[in-house]
Image 1 (spheres, rainbow, N blue to C red):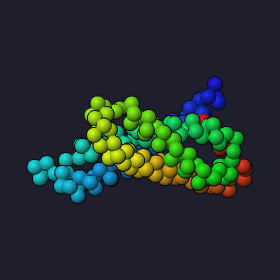
Image 2: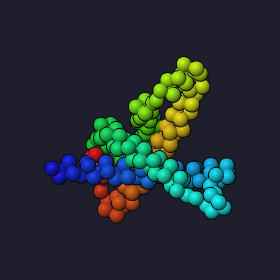
Image 3: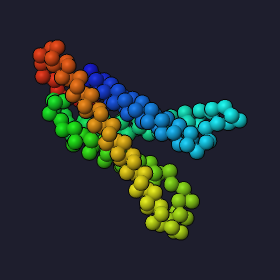
Image 4: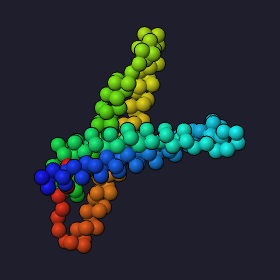
Length: 171
């Protein structure tokens, strides 16, 4: 039971890290877009609620992807030391998991309008989907890279203090 709780805690912390990271990025990007378009002001007063809720939905998506990435970590990096994990391979896994989850979420949330768009202008829709997957895949890759670099940095500091080898925590 203790092992299960430790793995569950690791998955929750990873999902929270991804969610908080994606919330912050979503807030900054949405705020910049609203400032550049002039839609941030309402009767001359800054109105941040739409930006906050857009960032919140981006953060929730990030947390969902972070949970999925925890499963990826558990299946592909079990019993490896943090120092031995390749950041490039970790980032590639983050991109692939992100693309997979965003693609599935997009299919589940598709509407009749989307079906009509495919019939009328299929290449335009494919370009939009490809652009969205490229952006979110890049964000997932960057978040995964940041995750492993933080873990490696923490492991380096901890091993300097304790003088011991650390294994990657099992999720």
